[in-house]
Image (cartoon, rainbow, N blue to C red):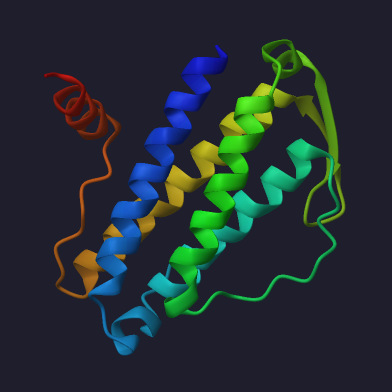
Length: 165
């Protein structure tokens, strides 16, 4: 299961990168436009995804999440995310597969105690990001832009093509 989770997070990074690439082509007005939804703008939504991925990695590692979080600027978002992704890769490389079935306890952002297995928390983070990337894709369409494809099957087909000689 461990290698499959790593594959899913490789997909997650691929999808996040495609969104980040597409965001770079947008103006500040397009990024900040209130389009409704869980988070009003593309900018707020991408920052929410980043913040939650950051929170979950801290939870998995047993680190404090009390550090105040400030939204990343368009110019620093990719660099911050690359650093987060490198930290996550290191975490997965060092993770003992047996730990995936272990219990993880943390308080959510509302202060509620959550008790789950580690693999469930890891999957929840991935699922959360996928959900909000879908919202960003919808927001792209609302402003008349063509969104990138972030479908898992597209990732699989592209990675298979890269692996073939």
